[in-house]
Image (tube, rainbow, N blue to C red; front, top):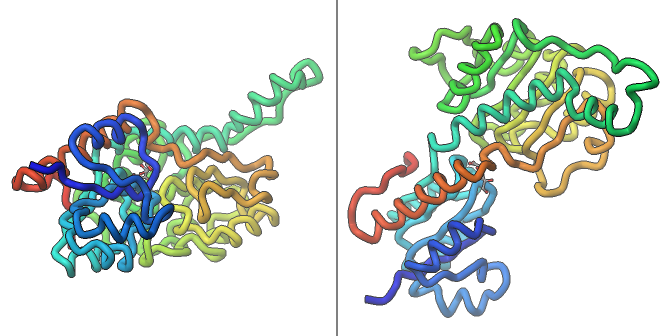
Length: 313
Ligand code: 8YV
């Protein structure tokens, strides 16, 4: 039987790409590089493989008449027009759970980094500043008040870790959860006003665009720190830059940005900001587990068995 044909719409790690190439005929990003090649292959393309950052808009779905499944290498699928896919009867899968630990670990790592100024301290030692005098004192994390924006699976993994630091945990989400004991606030402004550290881990997309705006940052206040491991779109980036410039908040640690891999020059210049390149799930162990889940979903689809991790309608 002919190997199923797959359109890959984002750069994928070699581990996943090589595994795909073993079992499928892979068209690598021809929708961007070669529209004529896409038009020629489209009647045979049965699956799309995306990543967390990739766009799979309605127009692309419409160009693929034989499309049967969209698999996302990532838990977030805000770049995929799920509605358009479902209208066509095309299911979408993602990679939940396998990355919870890594994303939560990095969230706590960023929180410690920005409060204890670990990157600055590293530079202080390397640049030979130490013999000239002590480094300025930092902010204590253990026992502080933490707000988590989004109390899904990763939010809970973050809270569990913060709990071990004796932090007082509150959260906001669409509705209070019956399965956690943390204090609930109905919106991000009320939450920000009540805490010293705010970690953002809510899905991206239209529903959360600009959720962390100037009002939330003002409520977080001059002693407050923001950590974003969700999507750049959840934070109003110009408002954040302004809040940092004006001292409206104390600092920020950011793994995600609006126009990745571009990061605003102003943020790159600020000493009270810690920046990482969208790497929260970026360990070999977790990325391989994510890749295996993509492969298992594809294999299940082509074997006619139930998908493992289908996203809801
Ligand atoms: C990316 C992510 O998918 O899981 C998500 O939603 O954003 C990440 O894990 C990863 O960087 C691969 O592109």
